[in-house]
Every structure is written in structure tokens, then in C-alpha cells.
Length: 352
Ligand SMILES: NC(=O)c1ccc[n+]([C@@H]2O[C@H](COP(=O)([O-])OP(=O)(O)OC[C@H]3O[C@@H](n4cnc5c(N)ncnc54)[C@H](OP(=O)(O)O)[C@@H]3O)[C@@H](O)[C@H]2O)c1
Image 1 (cartoon, rainbow, N blue to C red):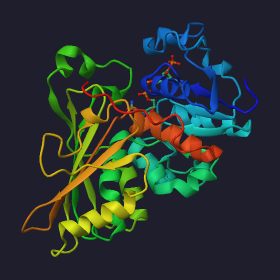
Image 2 (cartoon, rainbow, N blue to C red):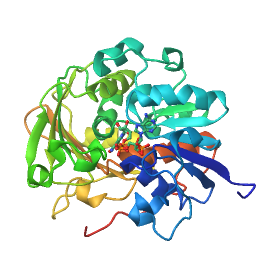
Image 3 (spheres, rainbow, N blue to C red):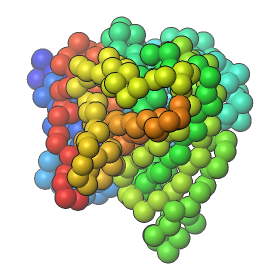
Image 4 (tube, rainbow, N blue to C red):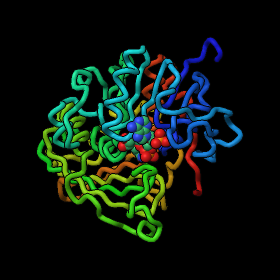
């Protein structure tokens, strides 16, 4: 390992977010990947699980208990496993970005309410920072433990945050309609992932009660919103991608389109990975997950309904990048004082 490079390792590297982290980190100029675990693939080359990495690394998976020490560890494991894995990693001096849901919520009781089990490391919750750089950049810089983000929560938060910050969400309610690609549920096969079931579907799977609502509430409340957020999520014919279409009833009837531009520009004017997409004509007038595939971009747009106080706020992301591994690397860059965009400037594919 070159002296100047930071070492990173990944717990749970055979899954979809682990694979995406490897794709990004193997091209990152400032880090060296020194370890990647998989119980099922221990001893095998990484390309056995991630064939897109063929020819790009000679690293092999190691068993979970053989994870090499590293400056930064990413934990890409199911919720429940994150809170068990993180404390010993912090104790041995690593900085940690935990992509599971275990360190996203600040309150242990809220965690138990949504995830059905008591939190195993409640003392760490106040020390963890929610890993969405657009909103918590300064806190992430100094953190030793940063959570990943929920993918649907990220699309919803980025669509709504400018409105919350501008004081336009005070009355509510807000209804977020989410479309979600199949990779968001990870590699574990279920009956819902059988091709015959998943293909060509628009299946409403969480009309109410989606866990990511808790993350959206937490972020928007901190931004000053008191509006209740309601969620409905659909599984659609995509491998990668989330589209959050949020129906908002603004706090004032006299809000103009110009006010909305002002709010969105104020929130995202200098953000490297948020693009405002709102064209007057043409096919691609609004954000579309197809147009951010493989990239760390979040495309955000909005429209005001004439004669009413309803606005529609939209965000499209690639769930595996901005909704998981990309945001996690952006956080790592901030934690290490590196260029925030390092390793993350891939242009999305088009057509795909
Ligand atoms: N998919 C997404 O779009 C997305 C977005 C944001 C956040 N997340 C979150 O990120 C985490 C990983 O998601 P994923 O989609 O990558 O899941 P996945 O494809 O199912 O992969 C899970 C990985 O965890 C390993 N693993 C399972 N149990 C473990 C344990 N107890 N200890 C250590 N390793 C364990 C598995 O490998 P071995 O069994 O081979 O060791 C596998 O590599 C989840 O908490 C998920 O909620 C996912």
C-alpha cells in the first residue's frame, strides 16, 4: 500500500452495495482497497461475485472474521448485523460508514418502533452522523461513524429539503409516491424477485408503513418542517433507480414558480451531485432514474400547479450510487478531508 493512500475494507462485499463500493473505490485516486469479506465467496476472486470487476483487481474475498484492519471500513450488511459489527471496528481505530439502517435514526426508541428490535449500541446513536452530505456536510467532516442513507429516503429528502428549508412545508401533509428498482432489495432471493413476478410489474408493496419515512421525518424536522410525510412505494421494472414524486401542499397560497426556483437554487446551487432538471420542452423535462444510472447524481425537479397551492417535487437517483455506495464514498471523502468528488464523477450512461 502506497504511503499516501488511505486503506479501506468492506464488510459484506459480495452484495449489491458492496459491489458498487468496490466499483467506485477501485477507481478512487486516494484509497487502496485492502479487504473485502464474504462468507459464501471466501477465498474466491472478487469477480466471482462481481463479474464487472474482472481484470481490475487480484483481491480475493476473506471470511467475515478475517476482515483486515483499515483506516476506513464500510459495513454493507443487513440491518441488525450493522450494530453488532460497528462497535469493535471503532474500538480498533477505524472510521466507519455503516450502510445498514442501524445508525440512521438518532433515537433508540424510534429504531425499535420501526425495526422491531432494541438497538444493541444505543450509546453510539448520538455520535453517528446521518450520511447525506447535502444536508449534514459539516458534521460528517468530523465524524468517526457515519450512517449510510435509505435509498428511497434520499430521493424524498433531496426532493423536499429545499422546501423545508425555505419554510414552505409547514402545513402539509406531504405524500411521497416512490418507484423503486429491484437491486434496492439486495441479493437475497425471494418470491418477489423471480423474473416472472418482477418483470413488467408496477407492484404497490408498501402503500403505508415504509421504514424510510422515519429518516425523512428526521431530516425534514431538522430543516424546520412540521409537515407529516406519508409514503407509498411501488416495485417497478428497473434494476437500478428510484423516482420519488412528492405531492406537497405549500404553506402559502401565493407562492410562485420563481419562489420555488429560489428555494431550490439556494439549497443546491453549489452542490456537485445535485442537478436541477426542469425544462420547458422536450422529452427529458423532469428527473428520470434512467438518466442517472451508474452515477452519483441526484436529479431534482418541481412544478407548481396553477391556481392551487400544490407543488410536485421530484428526485431521481441510482439507488446503488447516490442512494448507497456513492453517498457513502462522498462521506468518506469528507471524513478524510479529500476532494469530496474524488472517485465519483462518472457521467451516467445514455442510452442505457
Ligand atoms: N440495495 C440498495 O439499494 C441499498 C441502498 C441503501 C442501503 N442499503 C442497505 O445496505 C445494506 C446492504 O445491502 P445490499 O443490497 O448490498 O444487500 P445484499 O446484496 O443482500 O448483501 C448483503 C451482504 O452482507 C453480507 N452479510 C450478510 N449477513 C452478514 C453478517 N451478519 N455479517 C457480515 N456480513 C453479512 C453478505 O455476504 P456473505 O453472506 O457472503 O458474507 C452480503 O455481502 C443493507 O442493510 C441495506 O438495507 C441497500
